[in-house]
Length: 128
View 1 (tube, helix red, strand yellow):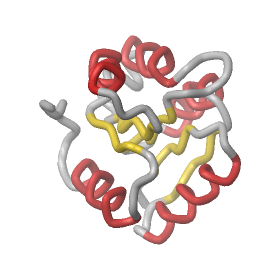
View 2 (spheres, helix red, strand yellow):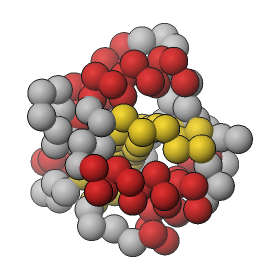
View 3 (tube, helix red, strand yellow):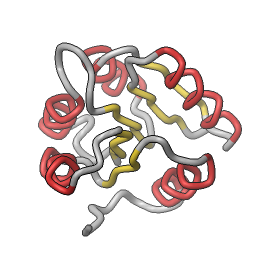
């Protein structure tokens, strides 16, 4: 079964994303903060990471840069799931190494489309 790492500090959003990943037929691995997300990415080697950006302590941008610097995680597709919607913030997601982003709030179908595109093909940076 393909694995999706869900890095999200807000408990309700994390549970919702886990439930949605399971509805799509994936094994969802929860992480409560960026440091835990990095550890679980190395340990679990998921096929995709959903990365919250605004988290206390280490933010999602920094966590993505760390993941991109490690040989064992550098090629895992990362989709930023963020409430930030301004163009400079979204550009920062891509500059940090995220392959793509989805802006909260999003629908199940929007999320499903993003996730399925990375689960069925190798992660390629998206040009926005």
